[in-house]
Length: 103
Image 1 (cartoon, rainbow, N blue to C red):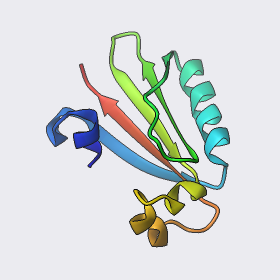
Image 2 (cartoon, rainbow, N blue to C red):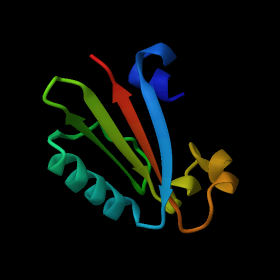
Image 3 (cartoon, helix red, strand yellow):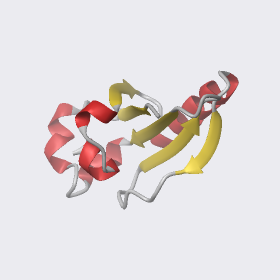
């Protein structure tokens, strides 16, 4: 589903999923700070996911490699799009998707 949304096939990107007790915006801010400290350049927000309680930001490494950070707060799993996954996410948990797109 993630690949389809990005318009890429599974062999064109790598992903990792993490969880945190931080709120979705706090998690996004923490990743932004850490990535920028590591030398990544923020390219700004990605397109609106249309789901309350989410963020997505795009970062570029010096060599042009791209990393997308998507945060899904607990309230995001109340949406029709993510309701099916709600039972898999502990209460008050933010899910962070890290998507690496090699160039």
